[in-house]
Image 1 (cartoon, rainbow, N blue to C red):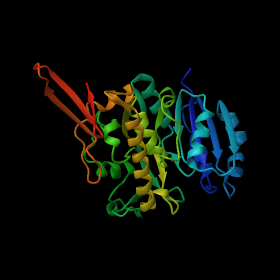
Image 2 (cartoon, helix red, strand yellow):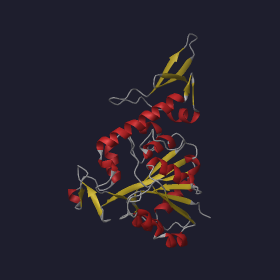
Image 3 (tube, rainbow, N blue to C red):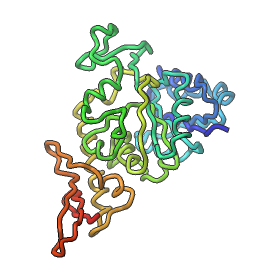
Image 4 (cartoon, rainbow, N blue to C red):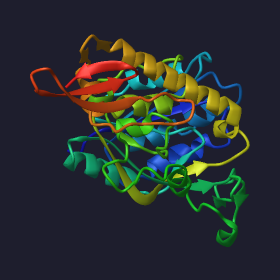
Length: 319
């Protein structure tokens, strides 16, 4: 039997979109799916809209779990969702987005089945507007419908432009050290649950849950980018990413938390193995306002024996 995929929907005030989200999962060609939706105390009819599809979902999926709770925020909702899973693979989808390709989960699951060293696989994202119509971005991330007026036809194109130092088609994609300034992973990723089980729970101290997730997962496994539109990213008035100041603040808080995690794992001349294995080959990493994070140095001792030391946040680690 094919691996079970747990599709997780954290929902909040998306009464106009959530049924489209669920229907895009129902339409997947991949059959072995459990669907789990947790509503974070929506003030609109979101949970009612979810429940309207319960019968159809129970016929389609191996297991269905829908629940609502008091509003606690995204972090608590994500932790609740993960605690309810039983699948070998995990797929997060926001309650206003959609899976674009009916074969998306099939494509991603088959990749992870064949490539055990990879913990995450993701494809490109197309943009859709509030009505579900495919659209594009101009230079200022405004919606345009004419390709000739567009700066970016997909979210992947925008992310690549923002990270010219990372070749999405190379082994550099998803390496831990590439996340030490900002997240650049598109939406719609499939995660190996056994790897997810190795990392800490989501925390309010790292408020960008997706960034936190990638900083942790990348310490344990490889990432794969499939250059094909598999996901529909809805661009409307309520997207959190549009609040630039808030996003910058959340990014810095999440990165600060990661710095604390790394430093706590460094004790004398040792460092937690999973972290060490992923960062010890990192090159010198510089960015304005951020200290030198990784630096590999060589030297000879008094007996002429060569040694290597890794400098991490000012700590010296013998290799």
